[in-house]
Image (cartoon, rainbow, N blue to C red; front, side, top):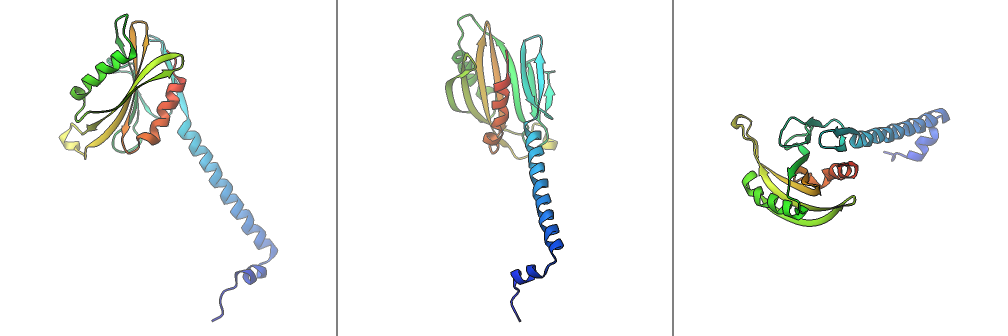
Length: 199
């Protein structure tokens, strides 16, 4: 049996067939590039949020569920499109004394952590800058499990960040939490949120 000769086979094709094949390949590549463009555009799309009472505004990821009904937080926004733990960004405010620093509030949050979250552990505490303001950041983890026994699932290790800035007699706490397995990948949503936030 004679081996297949690709070059001879292509040489036998009429010129119109070769041109159509090339055009079809270029069209497929163009459609793929266009799909990637729209996918990236959808992943980075945002919607404006403004809380007139507290004077806080930010750009939030589009298509995430916004919740402003919890009296303990200014805003909670969650990505409910995935499975498992919902990626979460949250803003909360605490009243503080005139000499309070972001580090004081972070120390208080780290003490409260084990009482709020099961298997809480501290990963890192550091000072950073948020725009022109001094801020302190705490990184931690805990185990989240379903409280409803009928919906019981495998517990998930959640990694979180609390970032605190002081505004007058208020501590503004920006929180990001996600499944530890996708934490670094989805942290870009929190970084974009922080870059847009005004308070």
